[in-house]
Length: 256
Length: 322
Ligand SMILES: Nc1ncnc2c1ncn2[C@@H]1O[C@H](COP(=O)(O)OP(=O)(O)O)[C@@H](O)[C@H]1O
Ligand SMILES: [Mg+2]
Image (tube, rainbow over all chains, first blue to last red; front, side, top):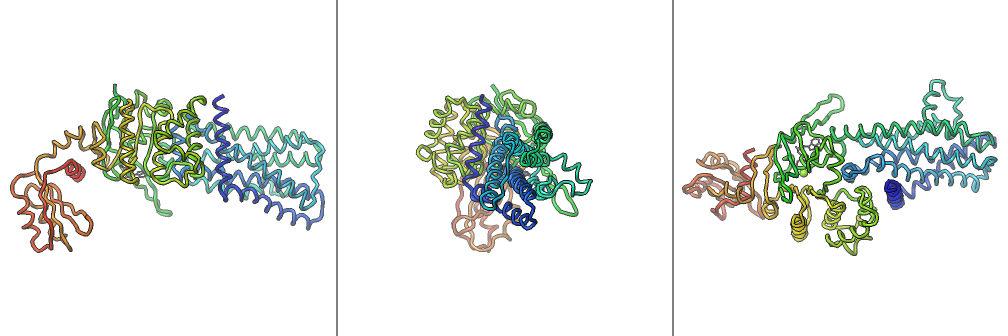
């Protein structure tokens, strides 16, 4: 009960803070539309309508990933910079319960970005993502957003220990676009890249959403996506205690 | 009952620098200190910048692991029972960081009320009471980014008290706030102690420690160099005399001569208003003034004052000797 309350209050305040910053809030809301526009214009040149639907889905997930990967690791860095990270650690609440609301707020922003990208494609570019299996599509979209948020959770947790981890999260933003098959089909990548793709939940999420949009069954991909994402969550929670202890030993909770 | 018990506590930092040729520098911030604070006491840790005060506090509130020695707060080990310690202590530091700028005071307090598991039904009343206590009533809906330093400091205090901690750690709470604010702060702290809270306060202001603290430990370069009540510390310094001479232009060349005088324990140059003041402290008796003036032969000088040592002199001497 009090845990649920903590999560709700935490997520709400996180969203409030983001909404009040031009950089995190307003830009985060319009940014995905720039990706989407670029992608749509490029694919429209190609001419195939099937490819365009795939691009719409890919671009929408791209927006989710960008929002999450960059904020996940920078949010704890900014807590460190403003001196609140130490106050959070000094409180008796288990640290994962403090990080999860940050992640949830990112997932909510991600969901927004997914929906607006699809609407943008529909309204401005006339890309009609036909949804034969609405339940499957919604499930695939939600699971993808949540899975990406859980990857963000792992990134955020590592930022507690390593002052440089924020750069790592930002550096991951673009390679993942490529590796997870957001735009380029996985089959076109060198074969040694594929095992890496399989370890990343967005790969399965994007595949699930694409399947649902094309009318084939997304459920296998959804299941794998959930399983892989759950591993990230378990891993992050397991290393959290260790990383916190190590941060207390190495004095990295504060800037100086 | 002993509330804080520190035994041979140590902490060193390793910092790396250099990109190609990596060098590791080790800083011994706290070099084995011992002290104990009893329930209801206001204990002061007094020392100059870099003495190790913040490092000590951060070990006691479980933000830093000690490199050696041990500490217990309310009977709980700060390493083994960190959560038990966290539940029962409050932490407030000076300066204007440590707040969510984009949130209002109320939201800042609500968040920490959740983190400290203040019962939902009590939260509103407790927050209202604290806003009243620190004088922020009426400003609680304003965003912190518009707050003055003094208001931020008061909000910090409210935050630190949300869960009614048995022990409060205050790290240089009056830093950067105006004299009126600092006086109000001292009154608030005194009231808390009156109410039974045990307080450990760090400061580099002598008079603050003197006015507030029941007991003071003077810390310099990671070691405790003296401990006692303010009166005991003053008594330790009541012998001897101090001569202050205003000088204009360079007096550097004369300082070694002053240091060589018999009985002189410290010679420092302070800048006050327009002039530099050479402060000579001596443990001995006899006519210090005449000897000082002789040694300052050839220096362009102004007012000369001889006086009794104060607590401040005792402090300067302790720290200089470390
Ligand atoms: N994170 C850190 N890394 C390296 N050295 C540090 C760190 N924090 C503090 N120090 C050093 O440890 C010493 C004690 O610092 P501190 O405890 O902050 O002193 P005080 O609070 O009394 O001013 C200083 O020499 C300071 O430079
Ligand atoms: Mg300090």
